[in-house]
Length: 400
Image 1 (cartoon, helix red, strand yellow):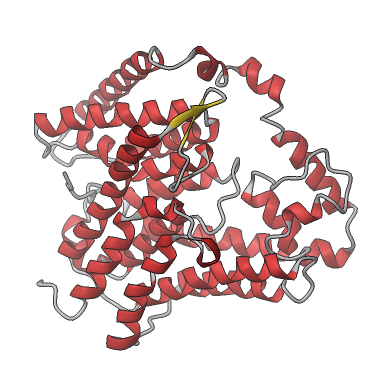
Image 2 (cartoon, rainbow, N blue to C red):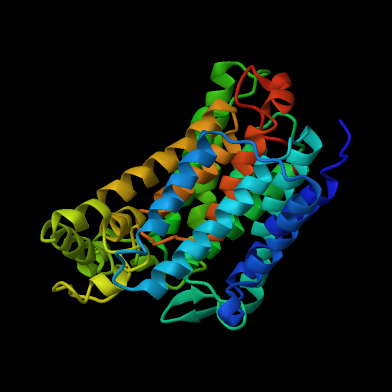
Protein backbone atom coordinates (compact mmCIF):
# COMPACT_ATOMS: atom_id res chain seq x y z
CA UNK A 1 0.00 0.00 0.00
CA UNK A 2 1.41 3.36 -1.00
CA UNK A 3 1.68 6.28 1.38
CA UNK A 4 -1.07 8.71 0.42
CA UNK A 5 -3.08 11.13 2.54
CA UNK A 6 -1.02 10.67 5.69
CA UNK A 7 2.41 10.97 4.04
CA UNK A 8 3.18 14.40 5.50
CA UNK A 9 1.96 13.41 8.95
CA UNK A 10 4.07 10.23 9.00
CA UNK A 11 7.06 12.13 7.62
CA UNK A 12 6.95 14.71 10.42
CA UNK A 13 6.17 12.14 13.09
CA UNK A 14 9.30 10.31 11.96
CA UNK A 15 11.31 13.55 12.12
CA UNK A 16 10.00 14.02 15.66
CA UNK A 17 11.19 10.49 16.57
CA UNK A 18 14.53 10.97 14.79
CA UNK A 19 15.22 14.27 16.58
CA UNK A 20 14.97 12.72 20.04
CA UNK A 21 18.27 14.13 21.27
CA UNK A 22 17.09 17.73 20.80
CA UNK A 23 14.59 16.94 23.53
CA UNK A 24 17.56 17.48 25.82
CA UNK A 25 17.96 21.00 24.42
CA UNK A 26 16.17 23.41 26.75
CA UNK A 27 14.94 26.68 25.26
CA UNK A 28 13.69 28.37 28.39
CA UNK A 29 10.00 28.86 29.11
CA UNK A 30 9.03 27.00 25.92
CA UNK A 31 10.58 23.82 27.28
CA UNK A 32 12.54 21.61 24.90
CA UNK A 33 13.03 22.13 21.19
CA UNK A 34 11.39 18.75 20.63
CA UNK A 35 8.14 20.06 22.12
CA UNK A 36 8.03 22.72 19.41
CA UNK A 37 8.75 20.08 16.77
CA UNK A 38 5.76 18.08 18.00
CA UNK A 39 3.51 20.94 16.93
CA UNK A 40 4.06 20.12 13.24
CA UNK A 41 2.41 16.65 13.09
CA UNK A 42 -0.37 17.87 15.39
CA UNK A 43 -0.98 20.84 13.08
CA UNK A 44 -1.13 18.52 10.05
CA UNK A 45 -3.65 16.31 11.87
CA UNK A 46 -5.79 19.30 12.82
CA UNK A 47 -5.82 20.79 9.32
CA UNK A 48 -6.06 17.65 7.17
CA UNK A 49 -7.69 14.90 9.19
CA UNK A 50 -9.45 15.68 12.51
CA UNK A 51 -10.18 11.97 12.96
CA UNK A 52 -10.15 10.62 16.52
CA UNK A 53 -10.16 6.85 16.96
CA UNK A 54 -10.64 5.91 20.60
CA UNK A 55 -9.20 2.73 22.06
CA UNK A 56 -8.35 1.51 25.57
CA UNK A 57 -4.86 3.05 25.45
CA UNK A 58 -6.25 6.53 24.78
CA UNK A 59 -8.99 6.10 27.39
CA UNK A 60 -6.50 5.05 30.08
CA UNK A 61 -4.11 7.86 29.17
CA UNK A 62 -7.00 10.32 29.25
CA UNK A 63 -8.02 9.19 32.75
CA UNK A 64 -4.45 9.62 33.98
CA UNK A 65 -4.20 13.12 32.52
CA UNK A 66 -7.59 14.04 34.03
CA UNK A 67 -6.46 12.94 37.49
CA UNK A 68 -3.28 15.01 37.13
CA UNK A 69 -5.36 18.00 35.99
CA UNK A 70 -7.81 17.63 38.88
CA UNK A 71 -4.94 17.46 41.35
CA UNK A 72 -4.19 21.11 40.53
CA UNK A 73 -7.26 22.02 42.61
CA UNK A 74 -5.76 20.64 45.85
CA UNK A 75 -2.09 20.99 44.89
CA UNK A 76 0.40 22.45 47.37
CA UNK A 77 2.23 24.04 44.42
CA UNK A 78 -0.14 25.20 41.67
CA UNK A 79 2.56 26.38 39.24
CA UNK A 80 4.41 23.07 39.27
CA UNK A 81 1.21 21.04 38.94
CA UNK A 82 -0.01 23.18 36.04
CA UNK A 83 3.35 22.80 34.25
CA UNK A 84 3.35 19.02 34.73
CA UNK A 85 -0.25 18.74 33.55
CA UNK A 86 0.50 20.79 30.42
CA UNK A 87 3.25 18.28 29.58
CA UNK A 88 0.82 15.39 30.00
CA UNK A 89 -1.77 17.16 27.84
CA UNK A 90 0.86 17.73 25.15
CA UNK A 91 1.52 14.00 25.00
CA UNK A 92 -2.21 13.19 25.02
CA UNK A 93 -2.86 15.48 22.04
CA UNK A 94 0.01 13.90 20.11
CA UNK A 95 -1.28 10.42 21.00
CA UNK A 96 -4.79 11.31 19.77
CA UNK A 97 -3.32 12.73 16.55
CA UNK A 98 -1.36 9.51 15.97
CA UNK A 99 -4.51 7.45 16.55
CA UNK A 100 -6.31 9.28 13.75
CA UNK A 101 -4.42 7.47 11.00
CA UNK A 102 -3.95 3.94 9.73
CA UNK A 103 -0.40 2.90 8.91
CA UNK A 104 0.91 0.50 6.30
CA UNK A 105 4.04 -1.64 6.54
CA UNK A 106 6.29 0.92 4.85
CA UNK A 107 5.19 3.62 7.28
CA UNK A 108 5.79 1.39 10.32
CA UNK A 109 9.24 0.53 8.95
CA UNK A 110 10.01 4.21 8.43
CA UNK A 111 8.94 5.16 11.96
CA UNK A 112 10.91 2.30 13.47
CA UNK A 113 13.94 3.38 11.46
CA UNK A 114 13.59 6.87 12.92
CA UNK A 115 13.51 5.48 16.46
CA UNK A 116 16.61 3.39 15.84
CA UNK A 117 18.47 6.30 14.27
CA UNK A 118 17.53 8.53 17.21
CA UNK A 119 19.70 6.22 19.36
CA UNK A 120 22.56 6.46 16.88
CA UNK A 121 22.43 10.25 16.64
CA UNK A 122 22.38 10.47 20.43
CA UNK A 123 25.43 8.21 20.66
CA UNK A 124 27.32 10.41 18.18
CA UNK A 125 26.43 13.53 20.19
CA UNK A 126 27.55 11.87 23.45
CA UNK A 127 30.84 10.67 21.99
CA UNK A 128 31.55 14.12 20.53
CA UNK A 129 30.41 16.37 23.38
CA UNK A 130 30.14 14.18 26.48
CA UNK A 131 32.57 14.70 29.35
CA UNK A 132 33.39 13.02 32.64
CA UNK A 133 32.16 14.77 35.78
CA UNK A 134 33.07 13.16 39.10
CA UNK A 135 33.99 10.02 37.23
CA UNK A 136 30.67 9.70 35.33
CA UNK A 137 29.92 10.45 31.69
CA UNK A 138 27.64 13.48 31.34
CA UNK A 139 26.12 15.24 28.38
CA UNK A 140 26.30 18.94 29.18
CA UNK A 141 26.17 22.30 27.42
CA UNK A 142 23.41 23.33 25.03
CA UNK A 143 22.23 19.72 24.85
CA UNK A 144 22.30 18.32 28.37
CA UNK A 145 20.86 15.21 29.96
CA UNK A 146 21.13 13.43 33.30
CA UNK A 147 23.35 10.33 32.91
CA UNK A 148 20.61 8.09 34.34
CA UNK A 149 18.05 9.32 31.82
CA UNK A 150 20.54 9.28 28.95
CA UNK A 151 20.66 5.48 28.96
CA UNK A 152 17.03 5.23 27.82
CA UNK A 153 17.91 6.91 24.51
CA UNK A 154 19.85 3.80 23.45
CA UNK A 155 17.13 1.22 24.05
CA UNK A 156 15.71 1.51 20.52
CA UNK A 157 18.87 0.64 18.60
CA UNK A 158 20.14 -1.80 21.24
CA UNK A 159 16.98 -3.88 20.97
CA UNK A 160 17.23 -3.85 17.19
CA UNK A 161 20.89 -4.91 17.33
CA UNK A 162 19.97 -8.02 19.33
CA UNK A 163 17.21 -8.79 16.83
CA UNK A 164 19.63 -8.52 13.91
CA UNK A 165 21.98 -10.96 15.64
CA UNK A 166 19.13 -13.45 16.04
CA UNK A 167 17.63 -13.03 12.59
CA UNK A 168 18.38 -15.57 9.85
CA UNK A 169 17.69 -12.86 7.27
CA UNK A 170 20.54 -10.59 8.41
CA UNK A 171 23.83 -10.70 6.55
CA UNK A 172 27.20 -11.23 8.25
CA UNK A 173 28.07 -7.55 7.65
CA UNK A 174 24.91 -6.43 9.44
CA UNK A 175 25.59 -8.78 12.32
CA UNK A 176 29.16 -7.47 12.69
CA UNK A 177 27.88 -3.90 12.56
CA UNK A 178 25.27 -4.72 15.23
CA UNK A 179 27.89 -6.24 17.53
CA UNK A 180 30.12 -3.17 17.24
CA UNK A 181 27.17 -0.81 17.68
CA UNK A 182 25.92 -2.71 20.73
CA UNK A 183 29.37 -2.49 22.31
CA UNK A 184 29.34 1.30 21.85
CA UNK A 185 25.97 1.59 23.60
CA UNK A 186 27.12 -0.67 26.42
CA UNK A 187 30.27 1.43 26.80
CA UNK A 188 28.27 4.67 27.04
CA UNK A 189 25.72 3.20 29.46
CA UNK A 190 28.43 1.82 31.71
CA UNK A 191 30.38 5.08 31.49
CA UNK A 192 27.35 6.99 32.81
CA UNK A 193 27.55 4.87 35.93
CA UNK A 194 23.81 4.35 35.77
CA UNK A 195 22.84 1.08 37.41
CA UNK A 196 19.23 1.65 36.39
CA UNK A 197 20.36 2.03 32.79
CA UNK A 198 22.19 -1.30 32.93
CA UNK A 199 19.13 -3.03 34.39
CA UNK A 200 16.91 -1.43 31.73
CA UNK A 201 18.95 -2.53 28.72
CA UNK A 202 19.47 -5.97 30.27
CA UNK A 203 15.74 -6.48 30.80
CA UNK A 204 14.99 -5.38 27.23
CA UNK A 205 17.62 -7.81 25.94
CA UNK A 206 16.17 -10.65 28.00
CA UNK A 207 12.71 -10.04 26.51
CA UNK A 208 14.16 -10.32 23.00
CA UNK A 209 16.25 -13.41 23.76
CA UNK A 210 13.36 -15.28 25.38
CA UNK A 211 10.56 -14.39 22.98
CA UNK A 212 12.18 -13.97 19.58
CA UNK A 213 12.14 -16.98 17.28
CA UNK A 214 12.86 -17.83 13.66
CA UNK A 215 10.40 -20.19 12.02
CA UNK A 216 13.23 -21.46 9.80
CA UNK A 217 15.26 -22.64 12.82
CA UNK A 218 14.66 -25.73 14.88
CA UNK A 219 14.18 -25.14 18.62
CA UNK A 220 17.64 -26.58 19.40
CA UNK A 221 19.36 -24.34 16.85
CA UNK A 222 17.51 -21.28 18.13
CA UNK A 223 18.53 -22.07 21.72
CA UNK A 224 22.17 -22.62 20.77
CA UNK A 225 22.17 -19.39 18.79
CA UNK A 226 20.82 -17.45 21.77
CA UNK A 227 23.39 -18.98 24.11
CA UNK A 228 26.17 -18.12 21.66
CA UNK A 229 24.93 -14.51 21.39
CA UNK A 230 24.86 -14.22 25.21
CA UNK A 231 28.44 -15.49 25.39
CA UNK A 232 29.57 -13.03 22.72
CA UNK A 233 27.85 -10.12 24.49
CA UNK A 234 29.45 -11.01 27.82
CA UNK A 235 32.88 -11.30 26.19
CA UNK A 236 32.36 -7.95 24.50
CA UNK A 237 31.10 -6.46 27.75
CA UNK A 238 34.22 -7.68 29.54
CA UNK A 239 36.42 -6.02 26.93
CA UNK A 240 34.41 -2.79 27.23
CA UNK A 241 34.88 -2.66 31.00
CA UNK A 242 38.65 -2.52 30.48
CA UNK A 243 38.23 0.86 28.78
CA UNK A 244 36.37 2.39 31.72
CA UNK A 245 37.81 4.11 34.81
CA UNK A 246 37.98 1.92 37.91
CA UNK A 247 35.76 4.37 39.81
CA UNK A 248 32.94 3.73 37.36
CA UNK A 249 33.17 -0.03 37.65
CA UNK A 250 33.15 0.20 41.45
CA UNK A 251 29.65 1.75 41.26
CA UNK A 252 28.31 -1.57 40.00
CA UNK A 253 29.68 -3.66 42.87
CA UNK A 254 27.27 -4.92 45.53
CA UNK A 255 29.38 -3.31 48.24
CA UNK A 256 29.14 0.11 46.57
CA UNK A 257 25.36 -0.21 46.22
CA UNK A 258 24.97 -1.11 49.91
CA UNK A 259 27.38 1.61 51.04
CA UNK A 260 25.68 4.33 48.97
CA UNK A 261 22.21 3.13 50.02
CA UNK A 262 21.21 3.13 46.35
CA UNK A 263 22.71 6.64 46.07
CA UNK A 264 20.26 7.71 48.75
CA UNK A 265 17.24 6.27 46.94
CA UNK A 266 16.33 3.72 49.62
CA UNK A 267 16.28 6.47 52.23
CA UNK A 268 14.09 8.65 49.99
CA UNK A 269 11.63 5.82 49.45
CA UNK A 270 11.44 5.10 53.17
CA UNK A 271 10.76 8.78 53.83
CA UNK A 272 8.10 8.81 51.09
CA UNK A 273 6.26 5.84 52.60
CA UNK A 274 6.49 7.52 56.01
CA UNK A 275 4.95 10.67 54.50
CA UNK A 276 2.18 8.64 52.86
CA UNK A 277 1.44 6.75 56.07
CA UNK A 278 1.18 9.96 58.12
CA UNK A 279 -0.92 11.85 55.56
CA UNK A 280 -4.66 12.35 55.85
CA UNK A 281 -6.99 9.86 54.19
CA UNK A 282 -7.77 12.44 51.50
CA UNK A 283 -4.07 12.94 50.70
CA UNK A 284 -3.50 9.18 50.65
CA UNK A 285 -6.33 8.87 48.19
CA UNK A 286 -5.50 11.73 45.78
CA UNK A 287 -2.09 13.05 46.84
CA UNK A 288 -0.64 16.54 47.12
CA UNK A 289 -0.73 17.47 43.43
CA UNK A 290 1.14 16.24 40.38
CA UNK A 291 4.76 17.40 40.24
CA UNK A 292 4.96 18.31 43.94
CA UNK A 293 7.40 15.61 45.09
CA UNK A 294 10.11 18.07 46.15
CA UNK A 295 7.56 20.29 47.93
CA UNK A 296 6.32 17.26 49.88
CA UNK A 297 9.83 16.63 51.21
CA UNK A 298 9.55 19.93 53.12
CA UNK A 299 6.27 18.91 54.77
CA UNK A 300 7.77 15.82 56.38
CA UNK A 301 11.17 14.96 57.92
CA UNK A 302 12.87 13.85 54.70
CA UNK A 303 16.63 13.34 54.79
CA UNK A 304 16.95 14.83 51.29
CA UNK A 305 14.91 17.35 49.33
CA UNK A 306 14.76 15.69 45.93
CA UNK A 307 12.48 13.87 43.52
CA UNK A 308 11.74 10.28 44.51
CA UNK A 309 13.82 8.61 41.76
CA UNK A 310 10.96 6.16 41.34
CA UNK A 311 7.89 6.96 39.24
CA UNK A 312 5.63 4.64 41.23
CA UNK A 313 6.61 6.07 44.62
CA UNK A 314 6.37 9.56 43.21
CA UNK A 315 2.88 8.94 41.84
CA UNK A 316 1.79 7.51 45.18
CA UNK A 317 2.57 10.69 47.12
CA UNK A 318 1.76 13.17 44.33
CA UNK A 319 -1.59 11.85 43.07
CA UNK A 320 -2.33 9.24 45.71
CA UNK A 321 -3.48 5.67 45.55
CA UNK A 322 -6.10 6.50 42.92
CA UNK A 323 -3.56 8.19 40.63
CA UNK A 324 -0.99 5.43 41.06
CA UNK A 325 -3.60 2.77 40.22
CA UNK A 326 -4.63 4.59 37.05
CA UNK A 327 -0.97 5.08 36.09
CA UNK A 328 -0.23 1.35 36.48
CA UNK A 329 -3.32 0.42 34.44
CA UNK A 330 -2.21 2.91 31.79
CA UNK A 331 1.26 1.38 31.50
CA UNK A 332 -0.19 -2.13 31.42
CA UNK A 333 -2.44 -1.08 28.52
CA UNK A 334 0.62 -0.19 26.42
CA UNK A 335 2.34 -3.45 27.32
CA UNK A 336 -0.83 -5.42 26.53
CA UNK A 337 -1.16 -3.62 23.20
CA UNK A 338 2.40 -4.64 22.29
CA UNK A 339 1.69 -8.26 23.17
CA UNK A 340 -1.64 -8.26 21.34
CA UNK A 341 -0.03 -6.84 18.21
CA UNK A 342 2.92 -9.25 18.45
CA UNK A 343 5.19 -6.20 18.47
CA UNK A 344 8.26 -7.55 20.24
CA UNK A 345 10.35 -4.47 19.48
CA UNK A 346 7.96 -2.21 21.41
CA UNK A 347 7.47 -4.77 24.17
CA UNK A 348 11.22 -4.97 24.81
CA UNK A 349 11.74 -1.20 24.71
CA UNK A 350 8.81 -0.32 26.99
CA UNK A 351 9.89 -3.06 29.41
CA UNK A 352 13.27 -1.35 29.59
CA UNK A 353 11.56 2.00 30.22
CA UNK A 354 9.41 0.53 33.00
CA UNK A 355 12.45 -1.02 34.66
CA UNK A 356 14.23 2.32 34.47
CA UNK A 357 11.22 4.07 36.04
CA UNK A 358 11.87 2.13 39.26
CA UNK A 359 15.05 4.16 39.81
CA UNK A 360 14.32 7.43 37.95
CA UNK A 361 11.53 10.00 37.77
CA UNK A 362 10.84 9.83 34.04
CA UNK A 363 7.88 12.16 33.65
CA UNK A 364 7.33 13.93 30.34
CA UNK A 365 10.27 11.84 29.15
CA UNK A 366 10.56 11.85 25.38
CA UNK A 367 12.01 8.32 24.85
CA UNK A 368 9.11 6.98 26.92
CA UNK A 369 6.67 9.09 24.92
CA UNK A 370 8.11 7.89 21.63
CA UNK A 371 7.73 4.20 22.29
CA UNK A 372 4.17 4.78 23.50
CA UNK A 373 3.37 6.70 20.33
CA UNK A 374 4.93 3.95 18.23
CA UNK A 375 2.83 1.35 20.04
CA UNK A 376 -0.23 3.38 19.06
CA UNK A 377 0.93 3.43 15.43
CA UNK A 378 1.34 -0.35 15.39
CA UNK A 379 -2.06 -0.83 17.04
CA UNK A 380 -3.54 1.15 14.15
CA UNK A 381 -1.81 -1.03 11.57
CA UNK A 382 -1.54 -4.56 12.91
CA UNK A 383 -4.47 -5.86 10.87
CA UNK A 384 -2.58 -5.14 7.68
CA UNK A 385 1.05 -5.27 8.75
CA UNK A 386 1.03 -8.30 10.98
CA UNK A 387 -1.38 -10.42 8.98
CA UNK A 388 1.61 -11.92 7.19
CA UNK A 389 3.61 -12.42 10.38
CA UNK A 390 1.30 -14.28 12.70
CA UNK A 391 3.35 -17.42 13.13
CA UNK A 392 5.72 -16.11 15.76
CA UNK A 393 7.30 -12.97 17.11
CA UNK A 394 9.53 -12.50 14.11
CA UNK A 395 7.82 -9.26 13.13
CA UNK A 396 10.85 -7.21 14.12
CA UNK A 397 11.46 -5.54 10.79
CA UNK A 398 14.97 -5.35 9.39
CA UNK A 399 15.81 -1.66 9.54
CA UNK A 400 19.52 -1.64 8.89
